[in-house]
Figure 1 (cartoon, helix red, strand yellow):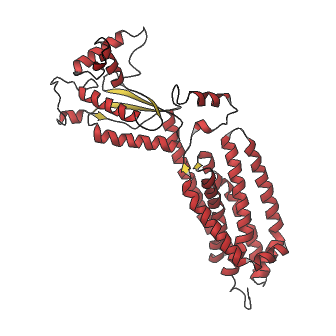
Figure 2 (cartoon, rainbow, N blue to C red; figure 1 turned 30 degrees about the horizontal axis):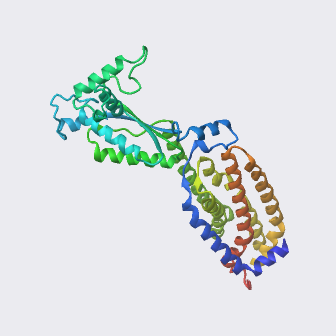
Figure 3 (tube, rainbow, N blue to C red; figure 1 turned 180 degrees about the vertical axis):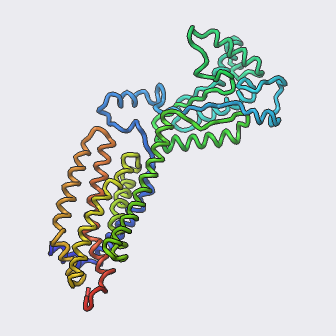
Length: 394
């Protein structure tokens, strides 16, 4: 440990410049990570259900579904925002304006990336209109009047098997209809972005439709994922600042508290940057890595700084204090970091991808923390703490 400390002190300029460049480079790639969660990627191909999902996804249906409840916007009708040739148009889902704009919304959705199938009332109405005109393809369009549309739907409902109705398609008062979008493999960020895009399209192009945000199991998990990922990352950052404040009070030094902030923050930043360079996503499981490893990273920094400050208070200069800190805790830091990193790497063989990625990223974070504590923290102490003792020529 003394030889290692001597080497670090002698090469402090090169280490400070090289590691600073490495930190900046890896941190730059943090933005490559998408904050996205996809339940279909939780397990690898060794599970039969995963093989089944991948086989049907995009062929029979999509693994994600967006559900809308699209109601007739009575305020636009009452304000005369659109003209209708049918003066007796009722203010419900049979209104030709509503059906026409619903059909346009369906066609817009079918053109979006990763959309497999779209189901809506307008599609059923077009099929019924064609059927009632001897399957003439020229009649594959929405009915021209609300009365005709209502009669078509009544005729269709009466033809359904006993016990079945239209409850899964329209509301009882006929004020809203169901609009379903089936999507192939997509992350939570893609689902939320597509729904936001759809809401904007409806606002600009469908005044007769009063939309609600998309729902469905996929959207529920998408919102949960985005909120939890953001909260965990921000919570970790706040915790780091709070820990540094506590260290300032415990160490009775603003300088040491600020210096401790660097080796506490950098390992997680480097790990997420490396992850952005290689994998490129952060889901719920990976968002906990920073806060999960925070305690271990802070412990390493506190142990080193405590031995260093103890030596400084005993009258040793910066270089001597660094050598003493290495001799007291250097081997312990290396041993515990390697053991913990090796333990987490065992998770990499898990068939559950969330467990495997957590283990890999935690191991990477701990290795970076060890590198920062041994090779970056001492040069920082030399340059920021060399004026504490008279005659210190470091």
